[in-house]
Length: 360
Image (tube, rainbow, N blue to C red; front, side):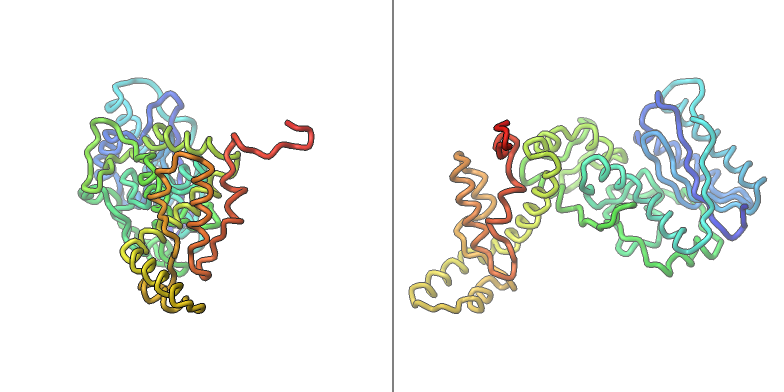
């Protein structure tokens, strides 16, 4: 049963032969159309996100009649935008829309995170890790005021394309269960600060993929609204890296390596000072060195190895790389908790699997 006080989560799907709805021109066309139809008396489009073959909508409708009229308008506008942008004709929508009534503050909060961060969910399902934390410009996230911290915006949003909610649940009730973190992954039990993944891929030479005509931001990344989809379909370099590891072990490798690189970056400015202090302490035969090394590093942790991850990239011999990497891990202070003994199983490549009892 519909209720005027309960918002609705609606999923609207298009046919498989339709091109990706996350195309920049379709996103722009939908936003322009939504500005005209987001508020129709008793029907309000409050939030949305556009995925490859479907749209998620969060709406408020006072009655069944208002819902039917409003959704008829939204569906017609989606179809016209598809025809105009992709220069095609014929049916666009795949069946009837799916409707879910959100009756509690927690349901509304979860639905908002699910809709606004839906692109992160699809990325996580495909790669096992979350993408870079950024605003999905193929959603209404630019006009959402419930972020814990505003996500980076690749471009300045235009005029508001969604209506302001009026019901208590969608306006403020959902906030009882906490604001939405832009690093969340809907349906995930862990909130991964996923910016580390893309940063580390860049440092390892795996790159952020973009189309030739896509504009570039000051940081060197593409700024198009379909960037997440382009990375999904053109991220062959990352998939090639994933194939180097035993099935299921890729995420066990890339995330620890990312954390190590972050520690490396923090310690780089004082690396030489720590090495000099270590040499002085060893020469003076001082056993308890921890406090002095922390002061030299200017951090609560340190690394006394002469290596950095950047140095290790130049190793040509796999045996030498393994030995130097273990020495690098063992150089961390005890409170970091790394050990060369914990890295062997996760970093074993496909070409070096242990033989089974049958010798295969």
